[in-house]
Image 1 (cartoon, rainbow, N blue to C red):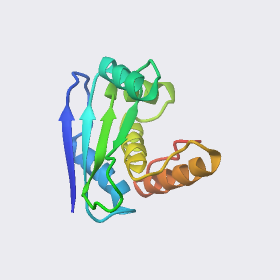
Image 2 (cartoon, one colour):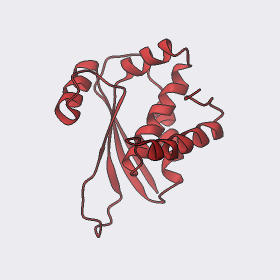
Image 3 (cartoon, rainbow, N blue to C red):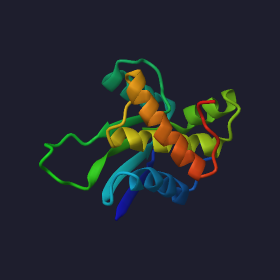
Length: 148
């Protein structure tokens, strides 16, 4: 069972439909877990920049931030964490990279969920593993490889 909570704290439009957010998140979750709950928070650039500065030491707005729930391993809770997405950044990146906005937004949701599940791209080996998973999931959704 999957539960995806979506909260919108930004005025930016257009936004993907809530059912799309849920479908994209579940696509990434289904590869790894059978029961999970996560929250997606949509924020403006100022809020994204503030969070990115506070938690990553980077003084700019970013597309997606992932905040995995930090609990002892022996605890089995279905809540896995929060995604914070800045739609205006996703929109601008899609324009800059000449990608369809919905496709890029899907990629950002999947990318963020994979971070919540423990994937990362800190070193080259981990990056290849994460990107391969992203490419596979996006291909299944008929979305082009975002890394080409």
